[in-house]
Length: 347
Image 1 (cartoon, one colour):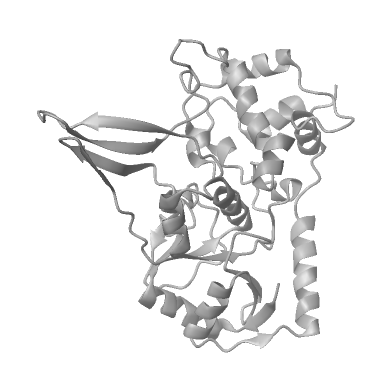
Image 2: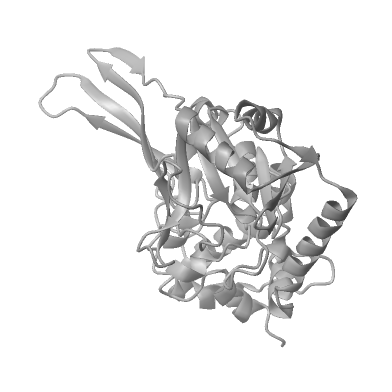
């Protein structure tokens, strides 16, 4: 990938251009003091928050809404709901979320609604220069520097030195359209970039329990498979609240709902809404048979979907990007780190 260098004024010019030509969204602290980070619409007038925390909500809702109308019908005539391809710019994704976006791109590769929204978006990542505290992205090859899922990736090496990695032609065109002065990164800047990435990786502590648990779940050669008893002990700790699947940037389960219009003879709407594989009825068949009847079975299905080799081969990577959101939201303490602690501890 090509790397360029811009200065702080060039970055300001890019932000202003994006705010003027697109619906610009950035991550900002909801309380103004660094807490409650969330995606918010921006006009680029406030200083950019380079060091804001990872927002609790990722970006999947921009492309895969929690609820969307697919079609309506009236008196036997169906009409597909048009999808607006709003020109959006997402500035400030972290590499873990960019990796998740690349994963979702493959999952929804043939989904017209998703792709209409996705093609209309410009995605700009900010690389992580230090560990975020709850994440483990290096263990799942999803950070701390971005490799995929972006149009532009920014690495702030100094207040007035920003390395820009070009991910797509659209990203390069955005720089040109904004009139940003760029130059090819000099050898010294490439070396500084490499040192920054190495330092970022080194800021994450070694976590043998994480790598051991992942190897067991993935059934890697030499790793002891997770036993059924271990999964069943985890099952009662899942309250099926769906917090993890709602916040997980790679979760994509959905269901289809048809709703008749009250009082009408034959009219209604079909919607696609988020679902969760941790709900008891998610996979129940029309016959009443449930392939995963026990809570532990459903917990096993969730984590093997995240780390199983068959799913990684199909979708290009593991289904976990190490963001840590599941640990923040899980009331049963079996987010990723909770599971790793139980499955990766020395025997």
